[in-house]
Amino acid sequence: MHDVDISILKLLQEDCSLSLEAISEQVNLSVASCHRRIKALEAKGAIKGRRAVLDANILGFPVTGIFLIKLAQDGPDVDRRLMQRLEREPAIVTCYLVTGEFDFVMIAKFRTAAEYTDYIYSFLDTYEDIRIQSYTSSLVVRTLRDTAALPL
Image 1 (spheres, rainbow, N blue to C red):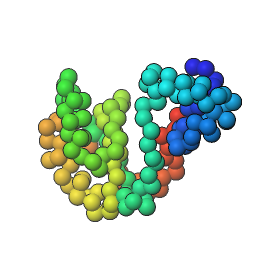
Image 2 (cartoon, helix red, strand yellow):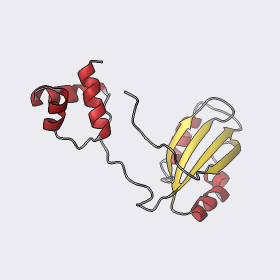
Image 3 (cartoon, rainbow, N blue to C red):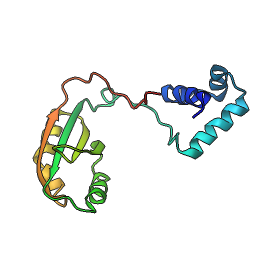
């Protein structure tokens, strides 16, 4: 990827509300060239979308839970079934299929510690269609770093 494209991506990653004029000025390109490059990056899929970064604490979701899941039995459609299930679970904001001792890592946001506890109590019922051997959960005490920014 061209250095100018990387510079554009860095700027957009930091603040996607920047105007074309501001971006083109910072990367030393004409507005038309900058626009063309951004459109090409979108077409390539390098830019998947643009979104506002919301403050979970201010918006009432100060509690973060981490769930580690070990499957009883893996199957060819377990990913699809879990993805379908997660569409109905807005508290789960991130889910990873991982290697190692556990099969999935899920990150969830809650309004209160009691809401987190209620989720734990209903966890196996919530995911009854996914054969879970065991799971563990942790409550995040302090966030030291939370970014979606790529190290460009």
